[in-house]
Length: 517
Image (cartoon, rainbow, N blue to C red):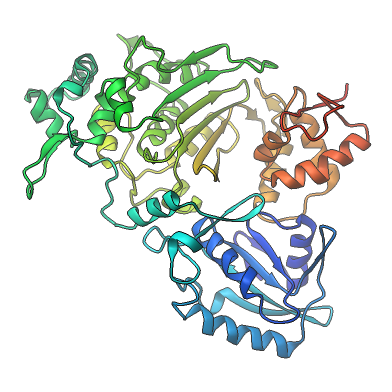
C-alpha cells in the first residue's frame, strides 16, 4: 500500500510502523468497540483537515499510553464504513466532504479488521472544516497533543482567507494619511528602486503616485474613501502609526553564541529607527547573511554578485513578511544560532507543505508587500515558494530546510540548518551536532518509518552537546514533544546518556538536557 512517499508491502507493515511511533500529529487511533466513535472521530477529521492532513485508524485500543491492534469484525467494519459515508455527506454532521473512495480503506491484520481514513489537508477555500453547523464553536486544529478547539479569532481569519482574490494588506486605514509614512524610509526605497531599475516607468512618479502604483495608497471607487493601506503602513510607516493599527506588531532579530542562553546581538524597535519592514530589511538581512562567504566585490551597499545561499536567505526574509497574518497575536521573529536560523511568522500555511516547497501558483496573504519587495530585487520571482530557498541551501551543501506549523498562537516556522554534509556522511562547519544521521532520522520520522531507540538516542546525544530543551529536540527531529519528553528522555537518563540541568525540578518547563561527558 502507498502512503505519502513510502510504499509498504502490507497493511500489517504499515500499522506496525505507526504503532512503533505511537500517535503523532498526523496519526490518530480510535477503538470503535460499542459503536462508531462519532464524538472522537469528527473533531479529529476537522483538525486534520484544518492543519496538514492525517490518518485515522479505527480498531486500535489504548491502555496506559500503549496501543493494541485488537481490530473489529468484518461486519462491523462494513457497517462503520456506511455510517461514515452517510455522515460525511450530511452537512449537519460536518461542513466539507474532503475524502474519496480511495481515501477509505478496509484491511485485515492477524484475523482482525480495521478501517483506515486518509484525511487530506483542506484547501484555503474549504477551511474552516467544522463539525455541525456553527464554525465558531466546532472548528478544530491539530497540535502535538491532539485536537484543540479553535478560538473565535482563528476561525474568523480562516473565513476571511477563503476568498481566492485575498489581499490581507489591501485595507484602506481609516484616519491615516501620508503623514503616517516615514519620509526617510520611502526616500531610501525610491533610491534603491531607481538604482536597480532605472528605466522603470514608475521611477518618475511623485510620492503619492508611486505609493498608489504599489497599492500602498488607494482609493475606494465606490465610497470615494482614500488613504494609506495596511501594506503601505507596514512597509514605510512610522512605528507609532503602525502600532496604532497593530498594537502587537514587532519584528525581532536575535543572534546567539554557542552555549549562550542570552542573545549577543539584537535588532528590534528600540526607538532609534522606525521599525517598519523596509528598514528591518535593510538592517537585518546583512546580519543574517554575514556568515556566508562573499564571492565578489560589493558596489556601494548592494551585492552585485552573490551565491544562491544569499538569495535563499533574502527569499526567507521576504517570505516571513509577505506570508504573515498581521491580524494575529504574534510577531515576526528571526533567531540566528550557530547551527541554524529560524524564521517565525504569525499565521498558517495557505498551501500544503508540498506545494510550498515545490512553488508554482503564488498564494500570498500580502500581495502588495510582495510587489514592493520585488521592485527592490528582494524576490526572485512571483510564486517561487520555497524552491529558491531549498535550491540555494542544497547548492551550499547545507541540510534540507524544515517547515513546521504551530498553534496557540498560530505561526509558521522555517528552520535553515547551517551545516554541511559530505558524501561520506561527515558533517562540516559549525554544526552543533548536525550530521547525516540527523538528516536520515528526520526523513524516517517524516515518512512514518520506524526509528529505533539506538538511532534516536545517538542523534539526541549529538544535539545535546550544549543544554537544550525537550521541545527543541522534538522540533529538530520532527517528533511530538510528548514522545521526546515522556519516552525518549527518561530512558536516556536511566541509561546514563544525558543529564538534566536541574535534577531537582524534573517537571520544570525550563528544564534542559546535555549529553554526559
